[in-house]
Image (cartoon, rainbow, N blue to C red):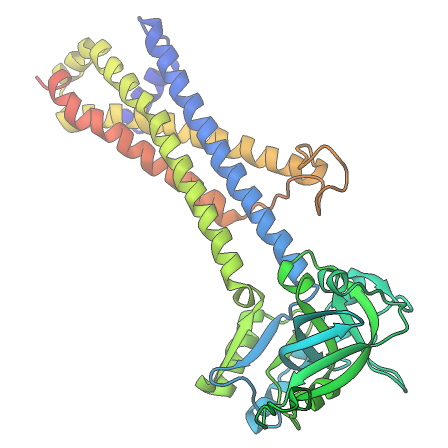
Length: 411
């Protein structure tokens, strides 16, 4: 066994002549344990919220989305775009045309975003699972005689409509290739109709409050497009790697197109959540630093108490480097032991919360989307916490040994 480590281990666990040193050492370990538990649990809970948001997005956002880098629309029949269809990792290919329109129902009207999709959209997303009102319990775009609109719950509330209403919605779009007729402004709009087919709730404001799904041919007719689309949404084959397929599509399409995954489609939201995660991490690191101040006090008192031992070691031939290593190991063992115990307890608490949902979000059932705090443990976060605690613990031990030790350990 390494001699300095052996002596440091004896110093940590053996009883000191002054009981206060034992107490301070245990307080140091406990402080590191509590801070480590807080780091593991906080990062895991924030990961859980990210996973929750991601699962909500999967109801509406595609796994990959192709957008034009310049302009609003592009031609989906381009050879490079058609090559994307043939990729083995691509399972579904949905053409989309999206823009703003004025929607009117009786005496109510709003400006909303209309999104034209084809029949593939129902397979691409899990929209059937988020319908709260529909004609026959499923998502429908059109039948033999009529077009249908699927509205977000907020849009439906503003218009005062439900899926079983018999009157259609009136959809107005300015004619993009004509000037406004000031004498008769109504003639400058394209008008078409769609019955209310369903109402959905994604629990995302951008889709619930100001969004409407329509058949793609209807939207093309309203905006005077023949075959253009504003985006192409993709679902991947089971087992396909998102990053790998994304790279393949980028190489096919070049710089004229953007290819975005779910996180990039909601970039602002996820950046905010990641920012919150690392801010909490930094705050807890400051708390850890405060907890490790006890290490400085513990090592300082230990060096004072062990002056006779140091003198004996010097007489036996020990040099300054070996003596300092003894007390460095002492400090590292305090932080290392605390980090190990803290990680184990933190992981145990996270697994209990994950399985049992011990800590609830609210008193009333159904007040939130979920009842208990979500948790997802990531190995990378656990390793980061462990390394962070050891690094700060190293610095906390290094200072008293190399600076304060000059007074109490040197000859």
